[in-house]
Length: 130
Length: 171
Image 1 (spheres, one colour):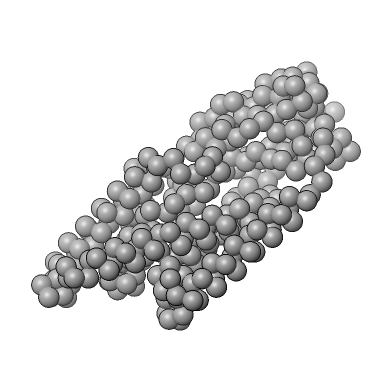
Image 2 (cartoon, each protein chain N blue to C red):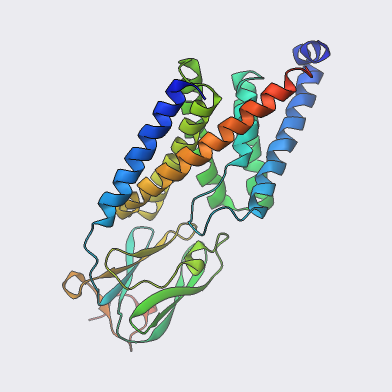
């Protein structure tokens, strides 16, 4: 490796190290609501305290999501990479599970950020209800 | 000198291109067998770039571009799906352009060019992910991708250099 290569490598390592440390400082909070979005649109918001299983059907395929013991995880999916299913369960506001092939994001938010809570009895398919 | 003549005629170039394409495809496949991602999504060695990078120093630029696009389309149809082709194209094309620029400046050796390639490959895929998923919080993942792109890029660059050093006497 030439001198310039080393300079480039060290510069990038410092930059990424700084970024990782800086982003690690973000405040981790316990959230109470699970928000699921597909392709940038809100799919549904669910209480983190109520145990349940959800089937999220996207244009590209499905993800089966489990909310249990104040944690949410994906336990089955038909995406090619399965990164979402391998991801550990999340419970904090800075955490998210992303399924890139299905364009789906699961994140934890605080109670007051929730816009459109789904109660445990409701089903997602019937769209907007009073 | 034999290969020098071969590279000038069409049939020889087509044969060489086909061989390199097969090689790139195999490297891409071997990569899926190696569990080197450490459980971090998006982190991979980029073995297929070993072929693309080496070719940048051996065959003409349009030929490398053709090789790259053909590799992505074929491996996408063989092992992946439409979405995977899109991501591969976003990463591959951006990385290719930046490696080309990096090489043209003559400031870097293969390792430096490969580091640029690795970093911009990850950046290209991240940008596409942000557009498709429409969640700007994905950028929080950038430092990790920057780190992995730089390290795997350096490794691939050093390997390519070693391969070319050993292939040159054969030519």
